Image 1 (tube, helix red, strand yellow):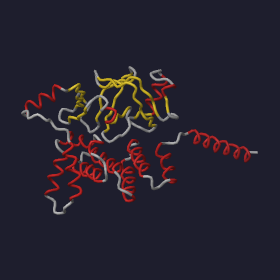
Image 2 (cartoon, one colour):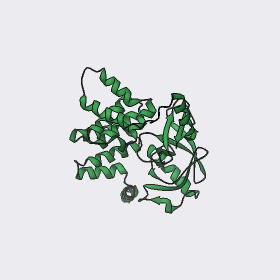
Image 3 (cartoon, helix red, strand yellow):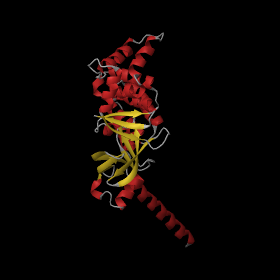
Length: 291
């Protein structure tokens, strides 16, 4: 009798575990891994897999995915993902090189704002890269060509104003300056979601903005969002009003739901650039938005 009870209890535990496992939603990386097994030569799938791994914070896995895919075929998308990783690590020289390789692989410089962001963050990263290449013993004409194409495509002031006048014009075009909350590498700001005070993090490598599972459940429970705002089979959350700092607002923004994400909300540069041109001022520790 005791043996039978023990067996029945074990079976119940197994069934409960299987039921819980069945309810667990499939992650984006798991879904893409299945697709890659069916289409291992699809470079777009490899690129999306690297994006999903970066969104989950697994930089090592993303680099491994990109390195493997680049051995199969060189594409602009793969090189730009490599550039984003280097940019996050503040290795502007390597980021510029990967951007140049993307140009060499067929991407037009004006198609991706990351190229111009390198210049903004590194005070001339493309020109720095060209100058450094000139001092190297090994010639790389193709890479130099890509960099020169990037340099020629940089937005330039057409007038011959003095540096002082140019600086004044840039200051006049500032929409907002939003201070970061700390002196660490994490770029955090004050914000609100539908009126709820929250911390926002900026990730220069992320391709999608995201929200933690804990924050989603809290907002749903306290009616800051409704069940109707949960989209795409519980993988995304539609936010009607996102306030950044004291005076900047993004309306109708979609945040990817990340169950294991530590930060409350992570904003990608693509969504921030809906507000205008973006620059991260490391010296003043603030996010600057221009017209």
